[in-house]
Image (cartoon, rainbow over all chains, first blue to last red; front, side):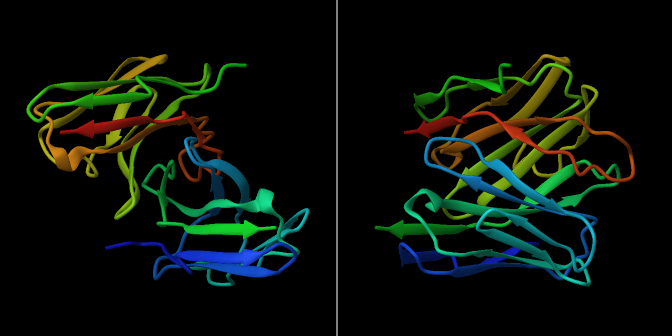
Length: 112
Length: 118
């Protein structure tokens, strides 16, 4: 059972378009992180959201944590080819609150 | 500063052989994680350690898999005997856990070890 469901699985768009990817769960997370992974490399953290309803912006990327802390979204404005990659959301689990479980990710391809 | 270092980067082996993957976490980090990534299942948590102690190994698929962390600067993931379905990219990650209740610390990943079992 996948605790974190990401959609869409694949997204192919043109440079300049806007897009939103989603991360949903039936579980409540104390915090949620978004990572970006490029081919041949490990994931790299983009942002951590902690408070229900929180919105964080990172240049053209806007992250939102759902009020119930069960879901999150990533919106990219005016996508660029450099945004191409695998976007992963991850929720904190464990009694010690130290482990992350990941969704399967959204593979984004932005063509010029 | 050096990041998480994994070796080997690539390994091709035959079914039944023993495979050992190695990881050196970032100095000063007290949590270490082993993940496996495949197209079908995504990034799966196998096991994680806090202060060199295994905390949760429920993600380890079978008894053929074992992991050790003899000290704060080294960990191994061993598969014996290996099978074709073990083919995947294995990632090691480390972080600094600041407390028991909530760790919102960043995970720093290595570049992964791509394992192919024929």
